[in-house]
Image (cartoon, rainbow, N blue to C red; front, side, top):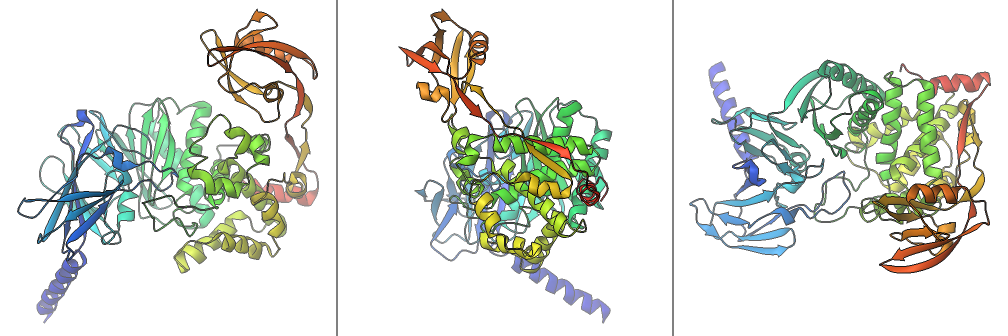
Length: 600
């Protein structure tokens, strides 16, 4: 009886397994010649009943809000039936192809991907390693997008390791040469797990009860025992904020390079691009801050998220006005985590926060672009800055971080040091991720803030989120023991940023309303002389910085090789600036100690 039951159970399980994989996607990724920078991909589809199958390549990578046109890296797309007969393929749009299936039971779509852009959001392949950012490599169909499947990776013979957060399918090893097979639950999950292939160094550590794998590509001045200890501290401090870690395991892929690119978050992994000499001194704190930032995204973005950010539309821009929460709150916490983990003392942390406030309020664009608009326009402004961006835009990272600090202080004051922003984020996590299993709208987020504080937050949002008003920092931070003084003063100012190449002094950017703009100077103008004397950058800056408001000089400039004479009259400019001072009230000091605690 027991044996019969076991046999029946096995048959049922086999049937369920077979059914679950019907009409699913299967991929094979090969590296045949790393030197030519091409990944070879086969995409297998079966059990289709329609005469035509439309396959697509994403145009963007989630977490990086810019249309990158990944299909530009594909060579000819071909399709074959199960007998090897070639099928007709018609290009439909810039990122979509139609395959004429005919009577084929299984369709194999074959293509090559040129990969030679090593960033955290794009793919790369050469003789030293391969990096796969899934949205730029794997096609999909709407029919299989939400179904599970398999990915087989066949590395080049010179590569010995494959590191990814994708789980192995069974034992994972398939054949000789280091080939492995991985499983994925949906296309979203597949492309949310970057893959490092090569001969990289790999180490592991456990923190918050979770095993973590770190793949280190490229030489760097890092020390693995130190990284294990310090990265574990970051993980523990981040997990304490929410009281739970949503992972069974986590993967860091770290590229040690000359031109670092930052990081990109994923569902249970991240890719970090770091200058190879960043593992000592102040640069090391910058590295740890990036680790904290991307790890915090496990909760904020990947699980606590705007309604628009998942499931994803890979065909076009996906707009949200809440990137100031997703990236801004994360930017606030990446420094706060370093404080709580013991890498900063309280004064160092406050100096970091003060620097962010002065950067935000000292940016001319902060009086032009609301942070909600900065979020919405990330696709066309944040990722496409120009010489005028400083006059018209604000960083939703920095401004959002300041807003997070203000809300944290307001919550601490409201609950007399018994609750902080951590508790609000926990409520969002519980309600929207765990219970409702969806994102929230702009209105829902504002309503959740108001409900948590028990206050009407309309004025706060109108002034600081949808408006450009400078917050009353002292009124908010002063109640938690940090007094804020305004220290901005009017001073003579030229109002342009200069650069020098050889003997040429060139204007890089011009501040709105400045003496330089009023004189008619423009970006790319070359300053040849001042008051009849040829000048270099140092001489010119020394001269203009010595002038008082109302004093003038005559400039000779070249614009598109045409010489122009311009009179420049110096004017005053007052850049908003603030300073912190410790409060002295007993209750305020108590609240400050709660805010700046180093032990949770």
